[in-house]
Image (cartoon, rainbow, N blue to C red; front, side, top):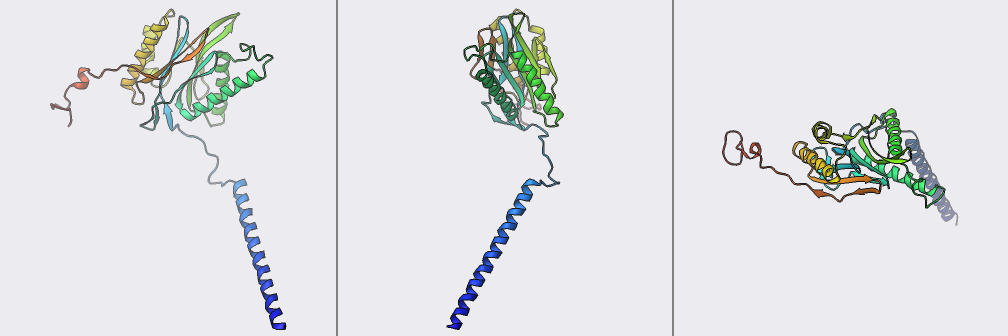
Length: 283
Protein backbone atom coordinates (compact mmCIF):
# COMPACT_ATOMS: atom_id res chain seq x y z
CA UNK A 1 0.00 0.00 0.00
CA UNK A 2 1.86 3.10 -1.24
CA UNK A 3 0.11 5.57 1.08
CA UNK A 4 0.91 3.56 4.22
CA UNK A 5 4.57 3.08 3.20
CA UNK A 6 4.99 6.82 2.62
CA UNK A 7 3.49 7.54 6.06
CA UNK A 8 5.88 5.06 7.76
CA UNK A 9 8.88 6.52 5.93
CA UNK A 10 7.89 10.02 7.06
CA UNK A 11 7.69 8.91 10.72
CA UNK A 12 11.12 7.24 10.54
CA UNK A 13 12.68 10.34 9.02
CA UNK A 14 11.11 12.57 11.71
CA UNK A 15 12.46 10.35 14.51
CA UNK A 16 15.93 10.35 12.98
CA UNK A 17 15.88 14.15 12.67
CA UNK A 18 14.74 14.51 16.31
CA UNK A 19 17.55 12.18 17.45
CA UNK A 20 20.14 14.26 15.60
CA UNK A 21 18.80 17.52 17.14
CA UNK A 22 18.81 16.15 20.72
CA UNK A 23 22.32 14.69 20.31
CA UNK A 24 23.61 18.02 19.03
CA UNK A 25 22.02 19.90 21.93
CA UNK A 26 23.64 17.60 24.53
CA UNK A 27 27.01 17.88 22.82
CA UNK A 28 26.81 21.69 22.89
CA UNK A 29 25.86 21.70 26.58
CA UNK A 30 28.72 19.33 27.46
CA UNK A 31 31.21 21.41 25.49
CA UNK A 32 30.14 24.66 27.17
CA UNK A 33 30.29 23.03 30.63
CA UNK A 34 33.81 21.71 30.08
CA UNK A 35 34.89 25.08 28.74
CA UNK A 36 33.47 26.85 31.80
CA UNK A 37 35.29 24.50 34.18
CA UNK A 38 38.64 24.53 32.43
CA UNK A 39 38.64 28.28 31.78
CA UNK A 40 37.67 30.20 34.95
CA UNK A 41 36.01 33.56 34.50
CA UNK A 42 38.36 36.51 34.29
CA UNK A 43 36.02 38.43 36.57
CA UNK A 44 36.27 35.80 39.32
CA UNK A 45 40.02 35.30 39.40
CA UNK A 46 41.86 33.50 42.20
CA UNK A 47 40.26 33.93 45.59
CA UNK A 48 42.22 34.27 48.86
CA UNK A 49 41.20 34.46 52.48
CA UNK A 50 41.46 38.16 53.25
CA UNK A 51 40.57 37.95 56.94
CA UNK A 52 39.98 35.23 59.53
CA UNK A 53 36.35 34.27 60.21
CA UNK A 54 36.13 31.77 63.09
CA UNK A 55 38.88 32.73 65.51
CA UNK A 56 40.42 31.88 68.85
CA UNK A 57 42.20 34.43 70.98
CA UNK A 58 45.31 34.38 73.21
CA UNK A 59 47.72 31.49 73.83
CA UNK A 60 50.15 31.75 76.75
CA UNK A 61 53.36 29.82 77.35
CA UNK A 62 56.11 29.80 79.99
CA UNK A 63 59.12 27.71 80.88
CA UNK A 64 59.28 26.39 84.44
CA UNK A 65 61.53 24.21 86.54
CA UNK A 66 60.55 20.86 85.00
CA UNK A 67 59.59 21.85 81.46
CA UNK A 68 57.22 24.08 79.51
CA UNK A 69 53.55 24.91 80.09
CA UNK A 70 50.91 26.33 77.72
CA UNK A 71 47.45 27.75 78.43
CA UNK A 72 44.48 28.84 76.31
CA UNK A 73 40.72 29.11 76.55
CA UNK A 74 38.32 27.01 74.47
CA UNK A 75 36.25 29.73 72.79
CA UNK A 76 36.03 30.29 69.06
CA UNK A 77 34.23 33.45 68.00
CA UNK A 78 32.35 33.93 64.74
CA UNK A 79 32.92 37.63 64.35
CA UNK A 80 31.64 39.07 67.62
CA UNK A 81 29.49 36.03 68.47
CA UNK A 82 30.76 33.43 70.95
CA UNK A 83 30.11 30.54 68.56
CA UNK A 84 31.99 27.44 69.78
CA UNK A 85 32.82 26.92 73.45
CA UNK A 86 34.72 23.63 73.15
CA UNK A 87 37.34 24.51 70.55
CA UNK A 88 40.53 22.92 71.86
CA UNK A 89 43.50 24.97 70.74
CA UNK A 90 46.27 23.09 72.59
CA UNK A 91 47.34 19.97 70.75
CA UNK A 92 50.01 17.29 71.10
CA UNK A 93 51.52 16.56 67.69
CA UNK A 94 54.07 13.98 68.87
CA UNK A 95 55.35 12.64 72.22
CA UNK A 96 57.69 15.61 72.77
CA UNK A 97 55.91 18.59 71.18
CA UNK A 98 52.88 20.74 71.98
CA UNK A 99 51.36 23.38 69.74
CA UNK A 100 48.86 26.11 70.61
CA UNK A 101 47.17 28.34 68.08
CA UNK A 102 45.25 31.58 67.97
CA UNK A 103 43.53 33.05 64.94
CA UNK A 104 41.57 31.19 62.26
CA UNK A 105 40.58 27.82 63.73
CA UNK A 106 40.25 25.99 60.39
CA UNK A 107 43.82 26.98 59.47
CA UNK A 108 45.00 25.71 62.87
CA UNK A 109 43.26 22.38 62.23
CA UNK A 110 44.97 22.13 58.85
CA UNK A 111 48.38 22.79 60.45
CA UNK A 112 47.90 20.16 63.17
CA UNK A 113 46.69 17.60 60.60
CA UNK A 114 49.85 18.22 58.55
CA UNK A 115 52.11 17.84 61.59
CA UNK A 116 50.44 14.60 62.64
CA UNK A 117 50.74 13.24 59.12
CA UNK A 118 54.43 14.12 59.10
CA UNK A 119 54.88 12.39 62.48
CA UNK A 120 53.20 9.24 61.16
CA UNK A 121 55.34 9.24 58.01
CA UNK A 122 58.48 9.67 60.13
CA UNK A 123 57.56 6.64 62.22
CA UNK A 124 56.69 4.51 59.19
CA UNK A 125 59.93 5.33 57.38
CA UNK A 126 62.22 5.05 60.42
CA UNK A 127 64.93 2.39 60.52
CA UNK A 128 63.12 0.70 63.39
CA UNK A 129 59.49 1.00 64.47
CA UNK A 130 60.68 0.51 68.05
CA UNK A 131 63.10 3.46 68.03
CA UNK A 132 60.52 6.21 68.65
CA UNK A 133 63.03 8.81 69.85
CA UNK A 134 64.85 9.05 66.51
CA UNK A 135 61.61 8.87 64.49
CA UNK A 136 59.99 12.04 65.85
CA UNK A 137 60.71 15.71 65.23
CA UNK A 138 61.76 17.70 68.27
CA UNK A 139 59.93 20.86 69.34
CA UNK A 140 62.65 23.07 67.83
CA UNK A 141 62.52 21.17 64.52
CA UNK A 142 58.73 21.54 64.45
CA UNK A 143 59.08 25.28 65.14
CA UNK A 144 61.61 25.66 62.32
CA UNK A 145 59.36 23.70 59.94
CA UNK A 146 56.34 25.87 60.78
CA UNK A 147 58.40 29.03 60.29
CA UNK A 148 59.13 27.91 56.71
CA UNK A 149 55.50 26.92 56.09
CA UNK A 150 54.10 30.25 57.33
CA UNK A 151 56.66 32.31 55.44
CA UNK A 152 56.04 30.32 52.25
CA UNK A 153 52.29 30.87 52.46
CA UNK A 154 52.83 34.58 53.17
CA UNK A 155 54.95 34.89 50.01
CA UNK A 156 52.10 33.33 48.00
CA UNK A 157 49.79 36.05 49.36
CA UNK A 158 47.69 33.29 50.93
CA UNK A 159 48.75 33.20 54.59
CA UNK A 160 47.58 30.82 57.27
CA UNK A 161 45.91 33.24 59.70
CA UNK A 162 47.45 31.97 62.92
CA UNK A 163 49.86 32.84 65.69
CA UNK A 164 51.42 29.57 66.82
CA UNK A 165 53.17 28.72 70.09
CA UNK A 166 55.39 25.61 70.04
CA UNK A 167 56.57 23.99 73.26
CA UNK A 168 58.50 20.85 74.14
CA UNK A 169 62.04 19.53 74.28
CA UNK A 170 64.98 19.20 71.94
CA UNK A 171 68.45 17.69 72.24
CA UNK A 172 71.46 19.91 72.86
CA UNK A 173 74.89 18.41 73.56
CA UNK A 174 73.29 15.09 74.42
CA UNK A 175 70.80 16.47 76.94
CA UNK A 176 67.14 17.34 76.61
CA UNK A 177 66.52 21.09 76.83
CA UNK A 178 63.09 22.78 77.17
CA UNK A 179 61.99 24.84 74.17
CA UNK A 180 59.38 27.57 73.76
CA UNK A 181 58.95 29.46 70.50
CA UNK A 182 56.40 31.36 68.46
CA UNK A 183 55.63 31.76 64.75
CA UNK A 184 53.13 34.28 63.36
CA UNK A 185 51.20 34.34 60.09
CA UNK A 186 53.97 36.03 58.10
CA UNK A 187 56.75 33.74 59.31
CA UNK A 188 58.22 35.92 62.06
CA UNK A 189 59.72 33.51 64.61
CA UNK A 190 61.48 33.79 67.95
CA UNK A 191 62.20 31.87 71.16
CA UNK A 192 61.70 33.12 74.72
CA UNK A 193 61.12 32.06 78.31
CA UNK A 194 57.55 33.43 78.21
CA UNK A 195 55.24 34.05 75.26
CA UNK A 196 51.75 35.43 74.80
CA UNK A 197 49.78 35.91 71.57
CA UNK A 198 46.76 38.00 70.70
CA UNK A 199 45.39 40.26 73.42
CA UNK A 200 47.62 38.37 75.85
CA UNK A 201 50.66 40.15 74.46
CA UNK A 202 49.20 43.40 75.91
CA UNK A 203 47.48 42.19 79.08
CA UNK A 204 49.17 38.95 80.15
CA UNK A 205 52.79 39.48 79.14
CA UNK A 206 53.42 42.29 81.70
CA UNK A 207 52.12 39.98 84.47
CA UNK A 208 54.34 37.13 83.27
CA UNK A 209 57.42 39.38 83.15
CA UNK A 210 56.78 40.59 86.68
CA UNK A 211 56.12 37.20 88.32
CA UNK A 212 58.08 34.68 86.24
CA UNK A 213 61.14 32.90 87.67
CA UNK A 214 63.27 30.21 86.08
CA UNK A 215 62.78 27.94 89.11
CA UNK A 216 58.96 28.02 89.19
CA UNK A 217 57.39 24.81 90.44
CA UNK A 218 54.64 23.22 88.37
CA UNK A 219 51.90 24.44 90.71
CA UNK A 220 53.27 27.99 90.69
CA UNK A 221 53.47 28.00 86.89
CA UNK A 222 49.91 26.78 86.60
CA UNK A 223 48.64 29.40 89.08
CA UNK A 224 50.45 32.17 87.19
CA UNK A 225 48.91 31.13 83.87
CA UNK A 226 45.46 30.88 85.45
CA UNK A 227 45.85 34.42 86.83
CA UNK A 228 46.66 35.66 83.34
CA UNK A 229 43.71 33.79 81.81
CA UNK A 230 41.43 35.31 84.45
CA UNK A 231 42.59 38.84 83.55
CA UNK A 232 42.00 38.07 79.88
CA UNK A 233 38.49 36.81 80.68
CA UNK A 234 37.76 40.10 82.42
CA UNK A 235 39.24 42.36 79.74
CA UNK A 236 39.11 40.51 76.39
CA UNK A 237 35.59 40.21 74.97
CA UNK A 238 36.70 37.21 72.85
CA UNK A 239 37.95 35.23 75.88
CA UNK A 240 36.23 32.61 78.07
CA UNK A 241 36.78 31.24 81.57
CA UNK A 242 36.73 27.65 80.27
CA UNK A 243 40.40 26.83 79.71
CA UNK A 244 43.01 24.15 79.06
CA UNK A 245 46.51 23.74 80.44
CA UNK A 246 49.19 21.64 78.72
CA UNK A 247 52.69 20.72 79.85
CA UNK A 248 55.77 19.17 78.29
CA UNK A 249 58.37 17.44 80.47
CA UNK A 250 61.20 15.00 79.82
CA UNK A 251 58.66 12.21 80.40
CA UNK A 252 56.32 13.39 77.63
CA UNK A 253 53.44 15.77 77.04
CA UNK A 254 50.04 16.09 78.70
CA UNK A 255 47.00 18.20 77.72
CA UNK A 256 44.32 18.70 80.36
CA UNK A 257 40.60 18.41 79.81
CA UNK A 258 38.82 21.81 79.73
CA UNK A 259 37.79 23.24 83.09
CA UNK A 260 36.45 26.55 84.39
CA UNK A 261 38.57 28.97 86.38
CA UNK A 262 37.05 30.96 89.23
CA UNK A 263 36.05 34.55 88.53
CA UNK A 264 34.59 37.35 90.62
CA UNK A 265 32.42 40.24 89.46
CA UNK A 266 31.79 41.88 92.84
CA UNK A 267 34.22 44.75 92.28
CA UNK A 268 32.77 48.06 93.43
CA UNK A 269 33.06 49.55 89.97
CA UNK A 270 31.02 46.68 88.54
CA UNK A 271 28.19 46.53 91.10
CA UNK A 272 27.76 50.26 91.76
CA UNK A 273 24.88 52.25 90.29
CA UNK A 274 25.50 53.66 86.81
CA UNK A 275 24.30 56.89 85.35
CA UNK A 276 23.57 58.34 88.80
CA UNK A 277 20.61 55.96 89.19
CA UNK A 278 19.83 53.39 91.85
CA UNK A 279 18.70 49.91 90.94
CA UNK A 280 20.02 47.85 88.05
CA UNK A 281 22.13 50.64 86.59
CA UNK A 282 19.92 51.14 83.55
CA UNK A 283 19.72 54.48 81.81
